[in-house]
Amino acid sequence: MAKKTQDLPTQLRHLLYNCNSKESDAMVHQAAKLQMQLSESDFPFSKRMRNFFTYVGLSTVKDLTLIPLTTFVCFRGFKAQCQQELLAFIEFEGIEDLFEGFSQWKNDAKQPPVSSRSRQ
Image (cartoon, rainbow, N blue to C red; front, side, top):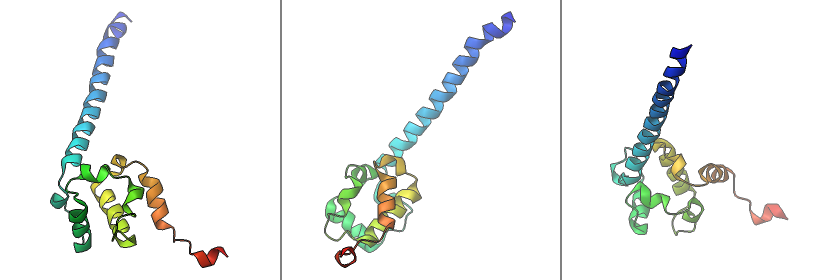
């Protein structure tokens, strides 16, 4: 019995170390993703999307995350095709958690727009 209680703090320290190690690995991975140049991605961006990134001055994933997703549709030239491509890129890179409101934006993008005629 005495041995189990003596080992308890050691076991807790080991578990805490493993937990912190996993968290720090995730933070390092997230930081690396933020610094990644968009041009370095293996995602096959269309010419339209590459031109959009240049036009807006976006070069890294961090640059993308600084713009709220709902604001992208306000940019001239950013239409449904670009929205679908940006969604695909975010999922391809596994960086959904870096974008606030991603799941809602994704759901909104899947719904067809409501025309003014259908409301009447």
